Image (tube, rainbow, N blue to C red; front, side, top):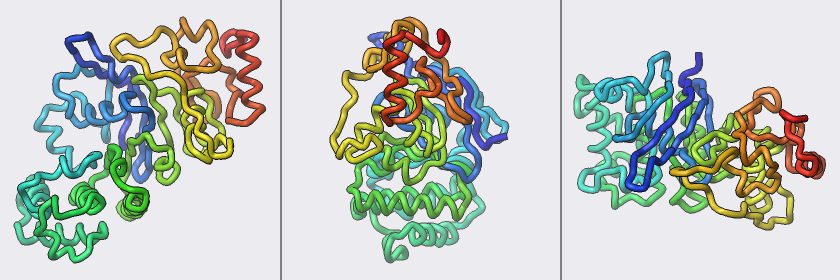
Amino acid sequence: MSLLEVTDLKVSFNTSDGVVQAVRGMTFSIDRGKTLGIVGESGSGKSVSTQTLMGLTPGAKVSGQALFEGQDLLSMTPDQLRRIRGPQISMIFQDPLSSLHPLYKVGWQIVEMIRAHEPNVSKADARKRAVELLGMVGIPQPDRRVDDYPHQFSGGMRQRAMIAMALALNPKLIIADEPTTALDATVQAQILDLMLRLQREFDTALIMITHDLGVIADLADDVLVMYAGKPVEQTDRRSLYYRSHHPYSAGLLRSIPSGAGGRGGRLIPIPGQPPSLISPPSGCSFHPRCPYVMDTCRVDEPPLREVAAGHGSACWLPKDALGLGPEAEQLRESAVAEGRTEVGA
């Protein structure tokens, strides 16, 4: 059994405009010591899905199953979840300045977190542990910086402090929700290297949520691509970059300068806008923006089916239409011209 197994997770919210279907059926698993990258545009359901696992989406209607070491996170009481959050599963959020309390010293916050879950640990021992953690994540003079306030840290140092806090109780799983988005490229690379090194050292599983495929290239073992609240492609990192199948994944790759599209560094954006999650399109949610749309795409919603060993794609294009090269392009265009789908082939 995997460390975490999520099956058919659905999350929706009632609003004055209607029901927002934020996550519309998400299934994935992750093993200890592995990294799962979850990518997609803003509003695709990446953050909501993982926050729901941690009980951080009050008021949401939730269904499905999320087994963490055999225990269903979605059916736990708030008290049971509090015993899981921190010691077993930790989270690193996008903005550390809003995650750290501005009126308390950074070291004090780490100490309080440790003692909240391990009340038998003395304040002196918890402080010693906080200093060790700050040094471990590369903060200079940790014995002095432990008494600084969050505003006295730079953005990169605050994120390092959040990583230290996440590691304080040696969790089995860390969920990192776009932890490097607000950082410049040099600091971002340092943080990613740090997370990779610490993950290997502690054998911790990591879920990395991001819209940056460059981050995924550095860290992930497996990748889940989300669009309009649903997974549209799920495979290992190398297959996504070199043998992607879903047109949305291919569009993301082509939008990277000098990326896998091989187009001389030109940005090739995906036309159109993501759909409303209050009234998503019929059939395939991506069909209004897809260059290979066929009649069946507008009517029938494609399941996440296997197009290669360990490679799932929610698209009606033929299974052998893999990759970004001219041969795959020709297969896709031929299928569109003939109105041929995998089901109707």
